[in-house]
Length: 98
Figure 1 (cartoon, rainbow, N blue to C red):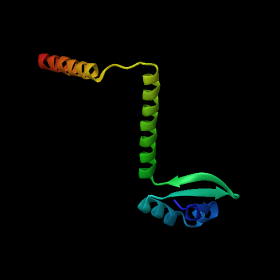
Figure 2: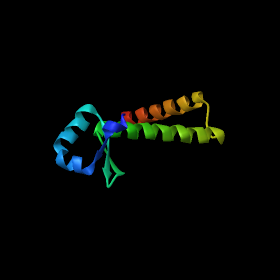
Figure 3: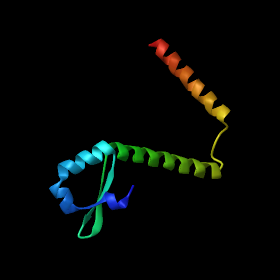
Figure 4: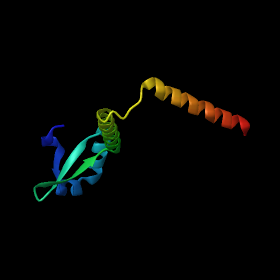
């Protein structure tokens, strides 16, 4: 992202709101909107925002996993799959009885 193209004053946004929204949406851009010379808000395409949120969620999961591994709070993958298979079998038996 080129900051020279991505920073706009709020007056520009007010005067060109429809054009700015269309450009941000169609080109999946992110704009920094300034007020009195200071960066105040980010205008971002919703798809870009959703991808960012998904990435942050994955990073949080990764960080938590790392903490659990350091605490030795884990089980072997074979045991995990065995537990999942048992739960699926138990669920299937419950469904057959209904």
